[in-house]
Amino acid sequence: MRPVLHRRTLGLGLTAFLTARTIGRANAQPDLMDRPPPELEELKWHPPLREAIQALINAHGQYSETYNANSPPYVVMDWNNTAIVGDVQQTLFLFMLEHFCFLMPARRFHKLIHVHASSHPLPAPFTNIAGQPVSFPDLVDDIVEDYSALAARYGHMPHPIAREELQDNPAMLAFRARMAFCHQAVAALHGPDAAQQWMIRLVAEQAQTDVITLSRAANEWCLGASISTQKWTCPPTRPGKAGPVQADITQMLRLTPEMGNLLQILQEHGIDPIICSSALEDLVALFATSAEYGYNLRHEHVFGARLVERRGIMEPTEVPRYPFPAGVGKTELIRVHFEQKRKQPPLMIFAGESSSADLLKSFPDTSLCCLINRKQSEDMQVFLREAAQPIPPRGTRRLYLQGRDENTGEWRPHASSLLLGSTTPTLPT
Image (cartoon, rainbow, N blue to C red; front, side, top):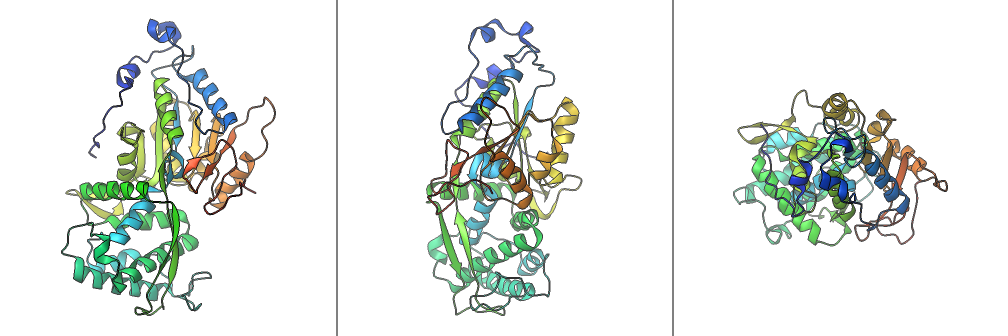
């Protein structure tokens, strides 16, 4: 049994309100019929998208005559870059690197990060600073050498280790640069799903409660920090076998009031919001079930990646017979847990993760799909380009685009987005 994270209830009377779900307006509570249906706040929604969402909520929620409380509608949404701006798994990864939050013996760490190794040199642009080719085995050996040096010096200290303790250590600077470089190489060679699984397994040997504590600290740190791109570079004093490398990393995490409001309104209409994310489930649930962050969902409606736990300690292996929630795995989870049980596809899909293309293809009867306008995988770009087409006057469509300003972490009331470092609005092409 996976523990349910503590959740405080918002002072909105939602619990009492939702227990009043009915099978249709004919059996509705009198006070429910008398009050006006709650509506989405305008905030920074793309107006045509907001209107389309509200129309579907009104038509299928518990204020409508067709509502069936025994099989309520549900909405599926990604977590990373959808319900929030940024990626909780990436945030924890960067935090663990900067604070050296690892507990594995060096030999096990070597085995874990070496899973995608090949003797062939990495393709451009994955070269060292001098422009020379880098082989994966040499890179991994360099990482493990840095890791061993750090573990010997700091392994006895409680995590997370203060940045002031680490910031001038050449082994630390080399370790984080090489790890970020390695992660990006895995993503380029094997795809974002493989890179996500590679990151997730790095919490191995830690207690589940400690991982949650680290994630909370990482979230608070990144929410309070400026959105920026930084260059992490190996010091020349630690060239290693592969030579010094460098990697650009993006620090970005923000709450999304529009999605927090949507989750509230959906529940007030008796429609279940379901989170399905490729990030570790514990990290997503920490955020999604929290009233403090403004999302306040039920833990049983949050699905993410799961690692085997033995006596509360995380193993670097995924739970058997549970699909990894990306690509076809994400679709399988929704089919088994919701479509088959409720005899209906999702009413709406909100997608911002690069692993959601199969979900969009597999539910053609879903009435509305909201896509976050950001750089994504080529599989997702096909849908993004379609969503970017002009909306016909007084017309409806299935795919909508929602823009955001990556420089501030806020949404924009447009389909176009301002990508990080740019002041020019762009649409997918």
